[in-house]
Image (cartoon, rainbow, N blue to C red):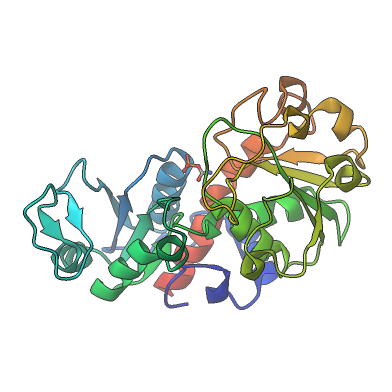
Length: 313
Ligand code: CP
């Protein structure tokens, strides 16, 4: 593996999930692999889980870690070619990324989408600018269109908690007050489409994911139909891809609640977190024994460690 940018860098998602579960049993077995090596984690946006789990994973492999909140701890970066830099940006990505690369053996990058320019976001403009100017492997810690460390975590968690070889997994849209990116659902869809699961997406009209991400997944526009017989309910809000970045639906009946969960096969509840309670999911569901959101977040460490291990190897 040269970089970890999306599912396309992974030959076999099920094999990688198995490897991550092995690492979970023996986290320090490869403690010498990263000796005298450094991972620099660059954040253009906030994070709790990704920031902590990726650092911990790198440290479990013996690496040193440096976290850089770009634009807060460092200069504001310019990304446009040929820019006349008379504004607020003090350093061009051509030097900025290249200099980070001088100090790093692996770079992690978080760069959310604008949600205003679909072509720029779906072309992964910022991530590509980094990629062009560095000479070490890049780990995507959530970019404009995908969040592959989260999706690998989700697959690990499904395998860990599934009683069936081929469980029914439902990704359901849920309401939110802010326009959120499509990264988590896009990425979840492309990983589930490659995993051995019966995958269904439930979302309101106008919220279908981009065809390249939803693939051949079954799409339903009525939540109750989707919940029937589900083994896992994965909730997430996203803004519209078609009417890019817009909130088109505020229908609270899409919130995950006990009534809809009762239609499932005693399904486990999943969410990548952070989650807004009683908007995306009601307290009674997230506080129930079927909620595995904390265990899911815990698995972020093993997902990151399996990826970093592959890059070091
Ligand atoms: N799920 C996730 O990526 O969490 P953070 O945004 O807190 O890193």
